[in-house]
Image (cartoon, rainbow, N blue to C red; front, top):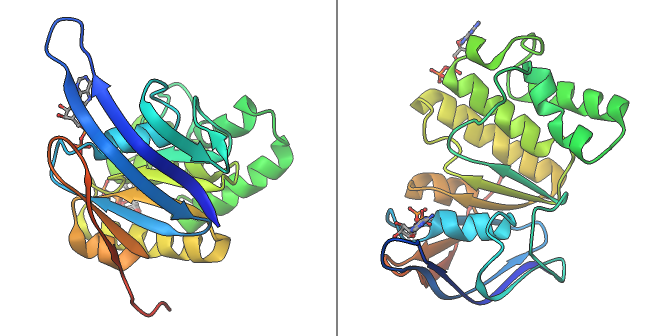
Amino acid sequence: DPLIEVRGLTKTYRPRRSTPTVALDDVDLTVGQGEFIALVGPSGCGKTTLLKILAGLIPAYDGEVTLGGRPVSGPSSEVGVVFQQPTLLPWRTILENIMIPIEVQGLDRKAGLERARELMSTVGLDGFADKYPKELSGGMQQRAGICRALVHDPKVLLMDEPFGALDAMTREFMNEELQRIWLASGKTVVFVTHSIPEAAFLADRVVVMTPRPGRIAEIVGVDIPRP
Ligand code: ADP
Ligand code: ADP
């Protein structure tokens, strides 16, 4: 079943003091329930724009974008988002940061705490709950950001180059963890990356975008055996 449906999506940025940019041009995309899509393409082709629209962070666009049959017009509790930079709140501890979606959505605190600790353990953050972001390395902050994106158990996980700033070993570890999380939970994932090997390793389908304006050039099914 399709969970995400994009039809004729065009996004034109119209900055007040310069010429408009067409970032996405007539994009169609369907993502099935439980599917893992990698979005690849050169810098500036509109990958981040597409992800932000799916996340409800850009409410003005032309075309149709639906999530579970409902038009996307703002942030949804069914979505978790991870950006390249960790964006943790510096005055909150790691655990308090991870708990933000639970608080914002008024979900059960006890169950949320249990899940937060479980996720922290999965990504190797045991023992860091009461530290502040600046006490952790960039890679560890990013892992905390991934826990925050998953703590409310969203149906959809949107990730924009989440491991771009990590060293090769941490990146590989995180790829394996992400695949485990995805396989165990059946989440629908849209993953933006510059790395074709990473895309091929993680995704069911690789969606290739053309540069300026962004169009979908090709959708490649990846038929690799999974563990
Ligand atoms: P990618 O993620 O593939 O690098 P982006 O979605 O960031 O691509 O950008 C697509 C195009 O839209 C680029 O030409 C970029 O310069 C432009 N763009 C992105 N954000 C804005 C903005 N807020 N205002 C104006 N132009 C933008
Ligand atoms: P990077 O950000 O350079 O990728 P990692 O996140 O991979 O670094 O961290 C590597 C390891 O170093 C961690 O798993 C942890 O054991 C240790 N480490 C990093 N920062 C700290 C810290 N602030 N306190 C204690 N151990 C740390």
